[in-house]
Structure formats: C-alpha cells, structure tokens
Length: 185
Image 1 (cartoon, rainbow, N blue to C red):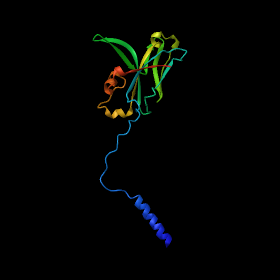
Image 2 (image 1 turned 90 degrees about the horizontal axis):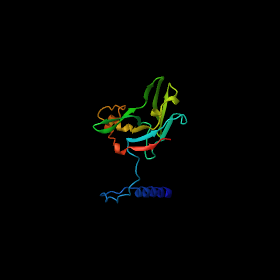
Image 3 (image 1 turned 60 degrees about the vertical axis):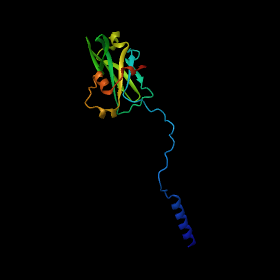
Image 4 (image 1 turned 90 degrees about the vertical axis):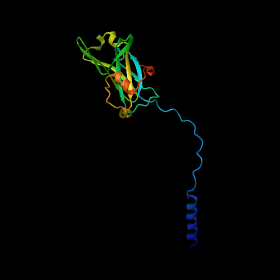
C-alpha cells in the first residue's frame, strides 16, 4: 500500500511538472542573427570559350560554379554563338541551340553537350575526320549555358521555345550584364 501511495504521488508529481502553463502570450523574443547566404537563385547563365583539338579529343568541359545548386530535375540548355550580325547599328550575337548539325562537303559534324549536376561537357562528333576541320569551327567557340530550375516551369504563362535563346532570355528574365564567364578545361 505504501508503494502504491508513493507511485501515485510520483505520477501526480510528474504530471504536475509537465502540465502546460495557461495565460496570455508573452512578448516576442529578440531577432536572431542573420543566417548564411543560400544557393544562387536560378536561372543561372554563363559563357564558356572552348577550343577543340585532337589533343583534347574534341572535348572541353566546365565544372558548375560551387555557389550554384543544380538538381537532377533542372534543365540545362547550351547555345553556340554561331554568328554576329548588326541590328540598328548594334552588334548582336546569333545563338543556336545544341545539338547543332553542320553539313560539310564530305559529311557532317555536330556540336553537342552533356551535363550532370556538377559539370557540362561540350564536344564535336560526326561522320567526318574532325582533324580536317578549319579553325573557324574548332577554335575559340563561344557557348552560353543556361540552367533553368524545374520549379520555374509553373511560373510561365505560355510554353517557351527552348531552342530560341532570345525567347528563353525573355521568359526567364535573363540579364545579359550578369552573364558569368567560365574557363573550359
């Protein structure tokens, strides 16, 4: 019986300790310190100049910037600066989406790419001997990489033609002044 009384008192004591307080809410506490900067907000855009040679097996790659968080559901588009024209007295780059097939006298070759969450690789492939290509096609080729987050799709009102860089830039609010330049390796 003594044990029962002791056990009952213990249970009541524990219940009393864990009983929540009731009454008006107190004043808010002080503002906490600012947290660390989050990942870069997408879409992210960067330019890469690449030279293709037999020594690099007609391949060049870049590592995604460390502050850029790319998910496997995101879309990565690559465009080649195919030409430059003048519009209204101003120079304008002509961007073509990859893969881009280029016919030549003896067959064709194409600029192509693949990517992971961590890198993008640009390469040439085709039905011709790539060593026969003129430097016009292999030296200092300018690529523009656009990383579009999968969660941005619902924000669009209409479909965007991803093969048209100007349409992509307009739809996602790409600021040409903020395009980052990266080095190929």
